[in-house]
Length: 79
Image (cartoon, rainbow, N blue to C red; front, side, top):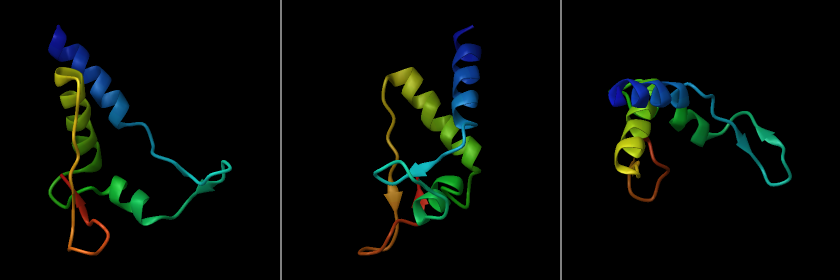
């Protein structure tokens, strides 16, 4: 029962679309952060990645995402 409940919550949470807003409430439509969130890694889909993050958060009470990329540049992947 617990597995099913956790998977239902994690799947639903992972399917919520991400939005980015500037101070003042104006939505940002195009930004490198949004691109990274939509495609966190070439090895896994965005829904599978965010689902795993939510499962970890629900089971352990916390979740961590590591941003990876060349030193001195913007991150290119999330793990």
